[in-house]
Amino acid sequence: KGGCSVCLLDQRSAAGGWVKSEELTLPGFVHDTYSALHPIFVGGPAFAELGTELGRHGLSYVQGGVSTGASLADGRSAVMETDTELFAAELDRLGERRAWTELLAEVSPHLNSLMPLLGMDLDSAEAAGLLGALQHDTTSNLPSAALLTGSGRELLESRFASEELIMMMLPWLLHIGIGPDDAGGALWVALLLAILPSGNPAPLGGSGRLADALHGL
Image (tube, rainbow, N blue to C red; front, side, top):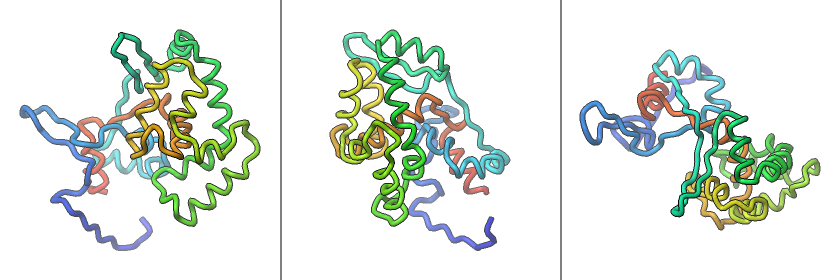
């Protein structure tokens, strides 16, 4: 779009890397081989800019009424509905609505610094500027140091009493390569708390449609 020529080098025979869909079992049954859900991409700046054009190349997203959930061995569960009233009722059932609301309110002032960090090399100069802004943000009751050094488990267990809710959120760290007890996990959990209630969109026809559309564009 900037008028530059582009050379794309890919290790695999088709563009897309781990964003791929295949008929793995029976003909006509398409499975996402790796990547399946794209909440951060759909909510991010690249899709905001390119979404209409990608749509002309066959990309469209669908989303069910449930974003995520957890089911424990003894039958207890937690479900994150994308309908705000239904999710509020679920939080009430778990006795966690006040804790959830308070934590989101404390995270909100940090979001302008947190959102761009997704997918960014945290050692880069650009990331250093955002992290510096986060460290000097005094508008939140949640200290930035707690986000930058604390683990996801520490943040969740310090705020919520419900094992169901904790287990609904904690495994999401694994999707971005962070363990539940790793330092810095609190930062990503805070971001996921803000993103996931909006849903978990998936490309109609399989995750590979995203790679196909980008390739076509």
